[in-house]
Length: 116
Image 1: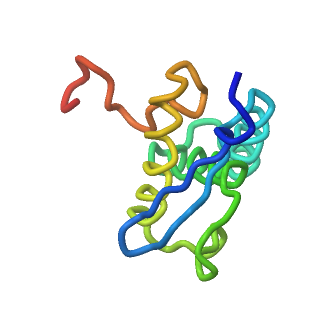
Image 2: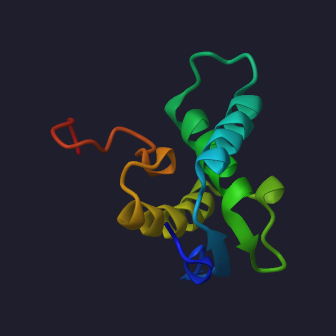
């Protein structure tokens, strides 16, 4: 079990700023998934970019504890910016708990996949 002092971590994302994230609980993972599903609405076969974007926004909505004052998940216009913040979060989560639902790859970057 994580100690209270280990339940959060801070990462600096180049050209964006410093973020404090919380390690996700199992309930956090469900909340993040529900946010992602809500963003996709009735779209049962979203494009990969749409699914990835919803997944990243869902996870970050739950995980961000502190962020740069000008960073707003509702006002991101660059996929690369969103992905950079998500990567800073997920790399640490994945190194801690590789079985986390948050640790699922957002794309087709699986071992043995074409281009992966």
